[in-house]
Length: 341
Figure 1 (tube, rainbow, N blue to C red):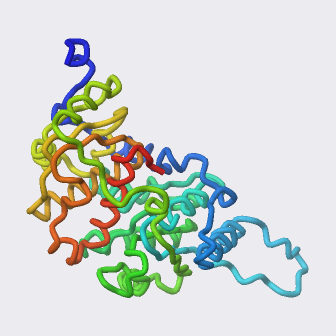
Figure 2: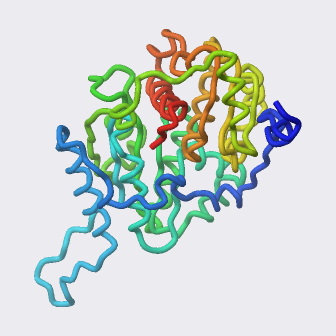
């Protein structure tokens, strides 16, 4: 590797990002790959009619911001639409696209973020200040609603209740394994049970289908041999990083997941050397959050060692975080093949 290449390539572990509550709020917009998401450019899978039905449901939710047109002397008063919409389905069926399309179509001040980004906002600003910041928004869009932490779930439920009471509307998604009849899945009933105080205010739409990322790519993440890895690293664009996989896992443990968005900011690609299977659940969950941010920014991954789709042990894939790991596997396959969607 030339001296110029050494200057061009940095280490991810040397990045120590900071993120204020104001910066978190400013970043509550759809990921870059969904910047132009609309209902018209969502492509439903013809084999799964529920995908077209979901498009109609989102379009109907958007109608809730339009005047009813009944007029002052209308005999029949239109029934007000429910303030909440929940898209329940497998990963890779286009829920984030639909949520982003809804966000783009909604009027006024609006916010779009993952569950962890909203809880990070509360952590940075405090509960009352976070609610005050979001109050008055026309739409609060929550991608990847989580049930893993009861405290966070109930805090978010309380906040959403306050925001809905103040006139905001809420749309949420969560991931479930495709075609899995209950195993490890985040079911609509789970969501409604956890937000029991507001369940009657949400319309739930089930979306079936296969992971679109697997429709046109190989089913395994690409892993390079040592010589191939070195050659690939030499070809990485300026600003990319090269690190040992174990060192990256250790570094992720020193940074709150809410700051991973800044950790990957501006990276064209990362190289991970000597990937190995993960044995600690905490390391695995941090990797999932990290991969989500890489995927949002479409950061290519070059890797050697164990293929990234095999980093989660079988007992992890059979446990309560199954849905998270399957989503991460899908995204790592896409990012290492050079075909992210």
